Every structure is written in structure tokens, then in C-alpha cells.
Image (tube, rainbow, N blue to C red):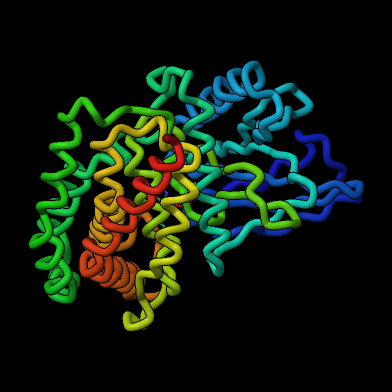
Length: 358
Ligand code: GN1
Ligand code: MG
């Protein structure tokens, strides 16, 4: 791994302070402070993003569109190097630099429904502002990223290649995931349903990808590497996956995993405050399914990685990805137990807003 190319971004070593930043599993991020200004520097993980220029081109295309149509929207575009590059290649690694948005902060966990509301509103707003932008113009930065059929196939391949101890250990979790294969079939129906639209989709809607101002109002979304054409279930589902439970995906005490209904309401209200007119009724009917889709996919991905000896997510300890998969399965079960209640909460929100609209 090469060191951050500070000189190429015009930083002098003497008055520049650099430290690791954030909690992402894929890219490495640093906070840079230089001449009383803060910046974010990132090294792109090329095992995951095999074509870093595709990310850069997507960000530039979206930036141009937003600049023309919504110039007031705060959109984080990479800064230029001294050689006028938005992506700097050094020693085989790619780096990019962003301004740190002044007076902004982010969260790693969602500790108040109001934060979930603000975040959901920001992700809804992002897709909504880009509803006039042809999503199919975007480059595919990770092919089949949220293709559940493929994720299931990769899980089956991982089972067939896994070491004996790991397959033995994973046995119960493998069976539970196989028993829920109907979640894949439902996705396949969605793909053939013309009422499900392809839109500009963020694909990584965890709370740490939203910037908040000092009053905890959402400013904008960040981490645009996986912005690609997609279905709304990816974004809503990943919010459900990461905001609903008081305990996050690293929690190993499974009894701490729960579904907080007030946080669910916050996601529904926040997202639909921006997206209600965009979504078809077939899509709003799949609101709860979105959570099942993303939680199930993440369980498949963590367990497949455990079976593949942790090559994708890495592991801080031996059973790390096994535990993460068990966590996601507990979350899936908790969500499925409340499916009917959650459905009726979406319906009652839609009924209320319809009355107001009349
Ligand atoms: C990865 O690196 P991070 O935390 O932004 C992953 C997501 C997973 C998430 C699970 C490109 O995101 O899809 O949901 O880990 N990103 C990629 O924590 O694989
Ligand atoms: Mg990410």
C-alpha cells in the first residue's frame, strides 16, 4: 500500500497533520488538517472497485447535473491535485481529496429517531433531485452489487469450496439462509415488474454516510462510490438494516438486536417526504420487503466471506464474519416477526398523507 500523496495535493509536510478517520470497511480514509483547514483523503480499495475512474466519472456527471439544476445542493466533489487530477495514482493506488464540510459531523450509530428521519430524508432527496438524470448513464462501479440472485449463487459457491471446519461451524446459519430462499424469488419478481423503476441509487445508506449540521439537520449524503442505477429497495432496505436495531452489525449479543418501531416510522416519513410522488404503489407495498432484501443479502455476504476465509471484509478475530452473519440473521428474524405491524405503519402514513393532499 502506498502512502498518501500529500505533496501532489499541494500539502507541505511541516504544517500538515494526518490521521485515520471513519469506520468504513472498504476504503481507507484520513482526516487532514493543514493551514487551519480540514480535508478528507481516501485511498480506493481496488480489489472492490476495479475501475476507480468509473467512480470519478459518475461523481463528475452528477455534479454537473446538480450544479445546473440545483446549484444550492451541497455536493462533495473531489478537489484537484497540483496536476489538475481529481484522482491521483501513486504506486498503483488511487487517492482522492475532498473538502471537509465546515461545521458538519456524522454518526456511526443512530441514537435518536430524528436522526433516522433526517438521514432517510437526505437519501430520498438525493434520488429525487436526480429523477431527471438518466440513471443508465452512470458507470457500473461494482457489477451486480445488489443482485440478490448472484449473491445467493456466490453463497452456494462459497459453501462448495469452504474448508471443512468452517462449513461445520456455519451449518445452522447456512440452513436458515437456505430456508429463506423465497426472499430471492421475490427479488426476481421485482426485476420483471415494470412498476419497479430504475433510479439513481446510493447503495450504502448507513448513517455515517450522511452529514449533519450543528442543529442535527441533514446537509447531504456522502460516499458516492456505489451510486449506480438501482431499485429503491436497496436504499430503504439498507437504512432499515442499519437504523432499526439499537445494536449494530458488530454486536455479538444477539439478544440486544431489536426492531425499533419509532425508527421505522422515521425512515418511512423521512424517505417518503421526498419520494412519495416518485414511488409507484407497487413500490410502496414493498417497503417492508426492502428491509428483508438488504438484511438477507448482507447475511449471505458475511457468511459467504466467512466460508471464503474472510477475503472480502477481512476479520479482526477468527469468527468475525460468522458472528456478523449470525447478527444479520437475528435481525432478519426480528424484522419478519414484525412484518405485519410494519406494513400497517406504512399504510397508515400513506393514508394520512393522502387525506392531507385532498
Ligand atoms: C461495506 O465500507 P463500507 O462500510 O462503506 C460494503 C457494504 C456493506 C457494509 C457492511 C463496497 O461498506 O455493501 O453493507 O460494508 N461496501 C462494499 O458493513 O462492499
Ligand atoms: Mg461505503
